[in-house]
Length: 282
Length: 84
Image (cartoon, rainbow over all chains, first blue to last red; front, side, top):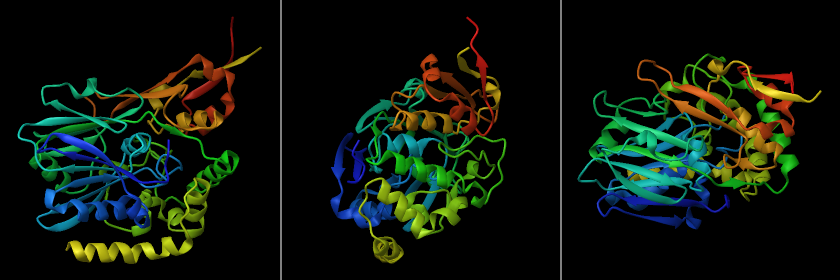
């Protein structure tokens, strides 16, 4: 699996079509929030909702959220959802899923790596994808909410409102790709070093379902996040691990061992680039 | 006597998949494909939480099972001597 060059799956609900697009010009946005805003700007006339992961998802502990960028009546919102969606997106080989337009009928998007099949709403969502390698996001039209793994949600009603307006009943993402970092022992050592920083995560270990690649099982992950640190949410790490993932030295090491050629300046410039993009969008 | 990994407390699994990624690292890859452990998620409408079930391939015993046991935050796994 190639991870350095960014790739998005663009789904057009009006045309019931999809395409995979390479994004060499969006390198500076890193991923997650930054990438989502840049893609929103590209597709804004199609009223997109954008799910994105960052370069660390799947590879390092506590980098376990998925970023969602959407517009609520013209106001840009960035939300973060937990569970296993981020690892499935990462191992599908995608950085982002951009869902444009609106379907006439209620549909389920069945995404397997980079291909999409649009299913009718009478399909049992639990029969789609590969068990152990899939993530199921379901839209509950009776309870007015959106859940990953029937448990993890986002704050506020924005995501439900957007997906229900698009007539989406659910999305299943199956990822069967894998990656071998070139210097595996360096990668493994860094993974362990970050895992050893567990006391720097600002939540207590709990008895709740955990996000994929996070051992905490905390009670906070159920409700997701809204807004926050630009770098942390572009990676896309958990907000409660911000002490670890707002450290530029650690982030640089993580990116470097995975083969990314970002510099310290790229990371330092990210908040300004994101702010400028937001200004153009608002 | 050879040692084998057993699922001791399946009900405690929180779905974190730390074991899945540990086993993959031992095989020098990162991903879900070909993992010798899968975590299956099931939701029963009567419960607030999903139920996670580890599915362990017997070939797991050919790798470092102590590391699998150690990385699990809920101590779901136990290592026992194999009885033939």
